[in-house]
Length: 213
Image (cartoon, rainbow, N blue to C red):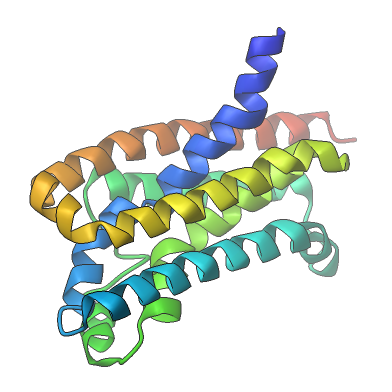
């Protein structure tokens, strides 16, 4: 693999995949519904709080992945396959413009009644859902023990958090400009990319499993 290929796999792929699986654009309609009665200042504050919480959750799981594997005696190939399946299910939801594993009508109704929706249900599970958590853990597994190889993963998480804040901060503008149809179209494009990465995760896990003694 040449320098460009190595750069693409190490930096571009984590940035694109993590942003797409966090998928802040798809959260806009629910965010607007849940904060309809709030002032613009409070809405901005919740957008920032949710974005920071999303980053913290993903960083924690990315950092603690090795410990979790040891505690539950999980092999890395098995987790890659499981992570690929979870990412694939999330990708299928994105392709169908549905999010039943990350937001339900009951959660949205509960969010409307809550004074602050930043942590739940917005940060988790809407943003940092099972697909995003398993994805960052798989990327950390692929990075290996070298700390320099894990830098792109943490950078991608921070970038996804910043993009999430900007998206929610401009949710009114995005909703008016794109509409629900435009958001769904972008979500389907993101879902296609995530589905491709999910297949790659599964193939990598099966390849490692076949090499195991």
